Amino acid sequence: MKVWIYYLSEPFHYQHQAFGDVEFSNAWFSIKDQTLTIRSGYAWDGATPKWQPLGLFTVGTPDGALRCGLPWTYHATLVHDVLCQFRHQLPLSKQQVNQVFDDQLRELGFPLRALYVWAVNKFGPQDFGGAS
Image (cartoon, rainbow, N blue to C red; front, side, top):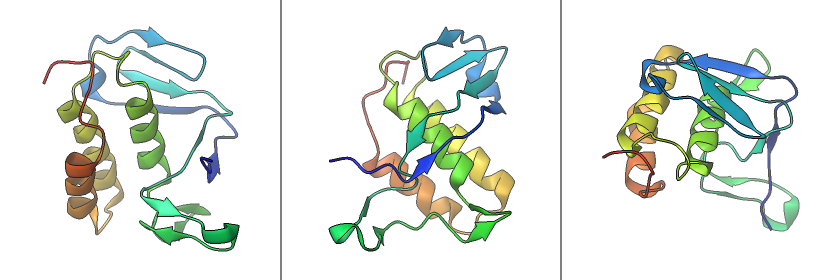
């Protein structure tokens, strides 16, 4: 059974040049004018892999210390997860999706950015709908 750790309570918007001329919309998010909008109600599991033995505690990739009440990687994992979940429907490559993740972590000044980007590149989804 998949365990969702986070739940988006209000829409989230993120603009990135990788979204270029992409126009896409489904029940969970849309991309238009280089802006990704994720609708409220979307749920995801943050940085992975992670397990919750007996539902008592979490073991795995940390989401980072709390900053303004949210884990450090909260929005970066949100965007990466939605782009990976719907990767076969989007005209984005693995390189573009990982670049968005890298740029978000860089904007945050996340100290483990290089390690996390390497991990999603190596162990994350490899089969994307967009060009290589």
